[in-house]
Image 1 (tube, rainbow, N blue to C red):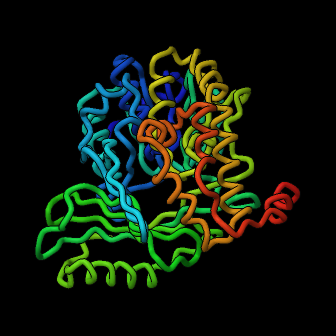
Image 2: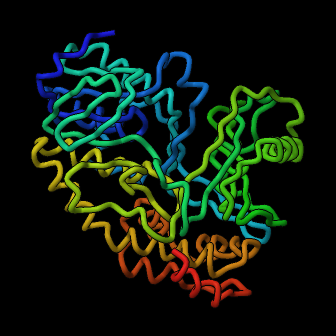
Length: 395
């Protein structure tokens, strides 16, 4: 492992945390500012042992990727499909929007290779516990201090998974090796259960290869509890129902994504830059962070370290309406509707909306007219209007 530069010598960028957002920032900075001196501080140790064990899969629509990011995204080991399916009990649709996925360890191994070949101006330090993060310096628990022209806090979800005014997307998944090929060659993003339980519930399927498939038991729930045993039983039954009683589980993954209907929005006036979930840079109505992480990385990498705060503030103002509207959608979903009726919202979404609106919604680039169209179609019943009104008083 390389030795850090003396702590008295300032870096151009210091990224605190080594997850998705930091990895994308590294790639974007290397493309747009190849001479920038970048330091990443990550608290985990022994990456070769922990990355795959703690790994997860990040997905997005192809249209979520900003045009300016295509050049540096092309170096990533991304699996791509030309379309995907959704299946409800009385309705199915092929959505002709490209879909992409990347495994977390593949992304970080790709970034690590860049660091190994770049020399002393790029460093990724593992096992670094941080005690203080400021806009111009980071202090480790050891007392060591790193100064930087731009510090970005990328440390993850922080307090976004607790408190009032929040629902959750939660999932338990298996990546499996099958004895025979899977019957579909494009993802099944939503295979919706006829019997709904614990919120909106569906199975998510990514066919990485003919006999290599990721399945997730997914719910949009009021509860933060992920029941691994129940999830495993449901995936086992799903595989058997689809004619795959023989398989090998290669790995498991589980996750809990915030879907807030109050708070957790980026602060345009904050001096210390916070990215990813910690800064509120995620799509509240899906829980996914990749689309906005890409926009954030592209915006920051195109300007100097001193201009980063201004460009992030401008990006936050640009998305202000979308942040608010996504949280309103969540309030309707989690406070207006009983859990067993939530699936009707997504049924209407895919049944009535054209692909262009669906694409802009997931990319977090939807317009005010798009936002209005999200409410079209027959509303689900019954509606708990009193509960919805009360939700504004409770958070």
